[in-house]
Image (tube, rainbow, N blue to C red; front, side, top):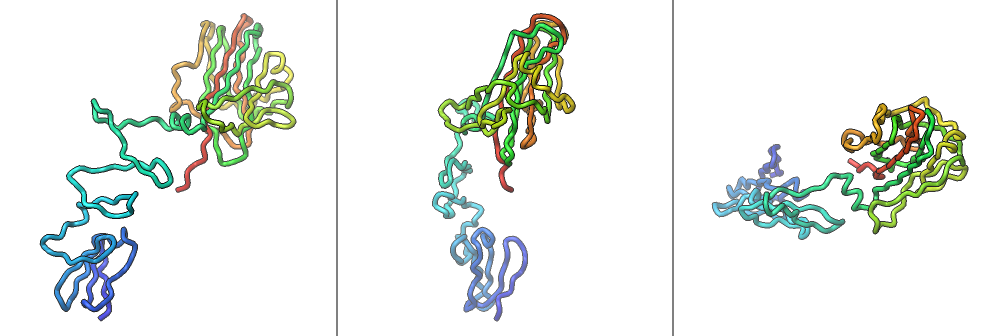
Length: 283
């Protein structure tokens, strides 16, 4: 007789003892049953073979899959969790010995370890007038490698801190600014580019008061602004968290991070950019 499939999960088949039992992917067929109508015997698929279901049969729910050996193994009374640490390597995660909590790090912290996290900074004490600016700018790469940015700024007198998208700064007006990989053992370079006639990868551009005045910054598209101090010296953006203030920047776009004085006082501006560069994972 032809083998008859009774739908369900796991699936159940009916046939004769002389019929060929199904051979399908082991995970799809795991725990499937085959009932022989002529012998009245029932067989269960264990992942690589059909075995007779007897009183001593151990259900597969008491087995675990060993990824390293690509085989099912008898489980004990404790669960085992494996984490992938390489293309073909797996490790058992460790827990804190005192609390037995699983120890994890935030993804942005992981990117530092992976060599994909970068930083640059610029400060100046030249500002003395209303509107004097300190700027860091760069152009994002035209790829699916997105920039996840977290910026900080401070000033010693009242100022604003603004992030401009499509800043449209004139080229060759600023100074190349060094970008540092936050994993100091990594040789990976940042994909962002300086604001120059011939843009340079792994470089940002900084602007002093005089340079900013000649760079004709476009202020039509501010995507973030914060007042620093409102007359209180030493104001900054400290205390803000990446979760609440991270931006994923638009590809192939010029951005400028700007501190501008709002009073005619001697002022020191400081800007620090921290970001990681990440390509979204496939589904």
